[in-house]
Length: 325
Image (cartoon, rainbow, N blue to C red; front, side):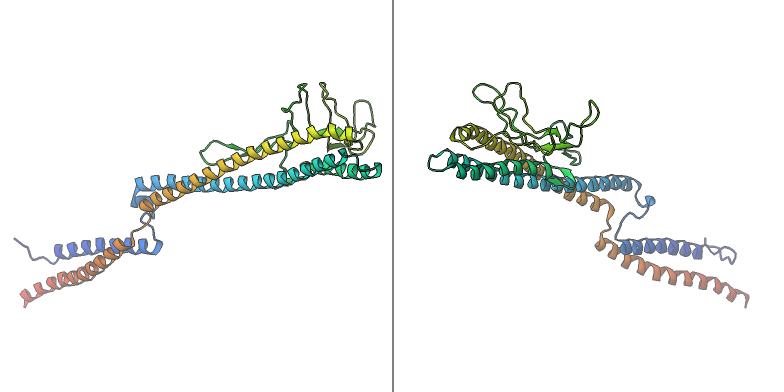
């Protein structure tokens, strides 16, 4: 049995409560459409928020790892391009030795050939010294720090390019055949005992010396190239060193190419990860615009009908006054 009361209008209270729920739903829908996010605060979906935050971190890490991989590829491309030029210089040096071996040229011609040969060797070593990427030496001297690329959760990829030397190659007598070597040779030997002057990273050439004795000029200035092609015999001595140098440069480029291919594969894998992580993140965090538009229409209608119902409930209480007339 319904009691007619003017102190406690339960019908109006129910209408007011329903209108408040509708208003909250309408407000949340408008917020989602405005921000584009389904989860705007932890109360919207606590578990979804935790999962999406973790996915967001994974996206950022994978994206940075991919950029690191591309930087590593650029670094290796610099090294590969430089070694291509070094190979051309070594080939030219071989060409000069072949020309120096012939008996149809005179002493002055050989001096001219030897001058170019010396400049080639010095130039190669200068390339090894001065080639840099982002301020760091590309061809790091022996015992110097190695480069590496951090690629998210993948194993760090080495960017070791090698030095301009060939310590593993051997002649028939099993001794070193380096044609050039980045060895730290003192520019001067002056000063107190046990001290030297400024250091110089320069070209070192040494023969089939089991002791590995380096031939450099320690009386001041950069080291000198101990080999020459002033005679056919000297040219014959240099030829195997040049061939070994070309072979070593080829091996360096092969290693660089393998590392570059590895970085490319990792970068592609990270790109796929970023796509999948982003898709999962969007499924959890982003608002479905179609659903929200449907909700917006629903709540707008409910809000209008609720307002009208509340007005009718308040009007019903006024009808009690008719009993007093």
